[in-house]
Length: 237
Image 1 (spheres, rainbow, N blue to C red):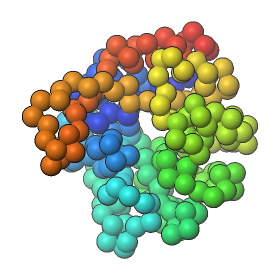
Image 2 (cartoon, helix red, strand yellow):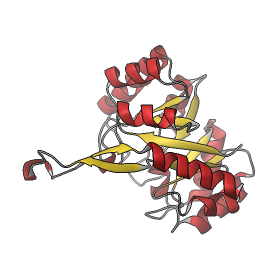
Image 3 (spheres, one colour):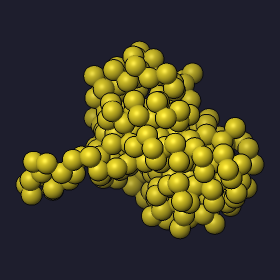
Image 4 (spheres, rainbow, N blue to C red):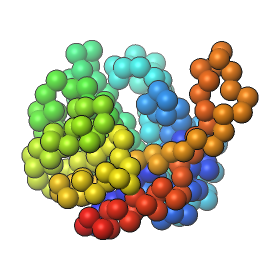
């Protein structure tokens, strides 16, 4: 079965994803910086309300994916909290300073997350050798890799996504993400991908924005867009 994961940046986004019958949620905050770990209160409320699986992003800050000892301890504590709240999956990962996979720390996060599903997030798109990294993550016990195929968008990276999916050969899922929408979703299914990731975002408010805070509009995952994504997937399958 083709899986649609919605990257939900708020409680309303998560509720919209569930109502539109997405297959699961990746819950995070601050999409404008690539996503960060959501608050305890948000996780608890979404788990309490939503009827579809909830995976939670564990990323303590924006920027690169090489973390200090203190940041790594925060990540581990966040995973423990997520497990206690009843989430179904963890989305995380750690790189070395040269952007290779930090095998030791990533393995520690994966082991701490068990028995939950573990997705290695788009830090993967920074690695110098994606095929080597894929085999390393498979060996570590990662269940899926969220990637845009080493390009800014998944559509631009489609050729690499196809190669990674062929290399994975069903041993680990390749979750295509970044810029996927109802107009291009069918391309990924036709290419053999079985999981896609999208925020399905729309702007709902620009009121009271201020230049001091970047004039960033308020967005939410749109249920109508999610429905169109699901239809595009079904039509292409």
